[in-house]
Length: 78
Image 1 (cartoon, helix red, strand yellow):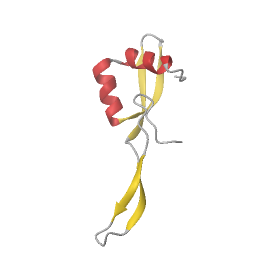
Image 2 (image 1 turned 120 degrees about the horizontal axis):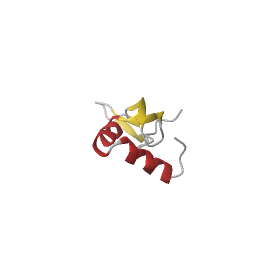
Image 3 (image 1 turned 90 degrees about the vertical axis):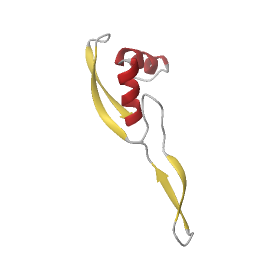
Image 4 (image 1 turned 180 degrees about the vertical axis):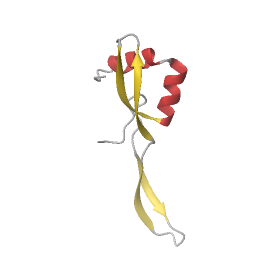
């Protein structure tokens, strides 16, 4: 399963890890994605989302109903 946030769309970052001797090796920085269950009053059920830590803060700030409406407006299944 991909390391992608359903709320923000955050995806892994790619680049090089540079050692002390300046040797470059490929590196992938994954977002901090967690599986969280939320009760959505507008749907009358719980939904399980794969959200990043920043996405959890967005849900706390805006509310789960607003965030789920945004996800559904993008055409994603919740």
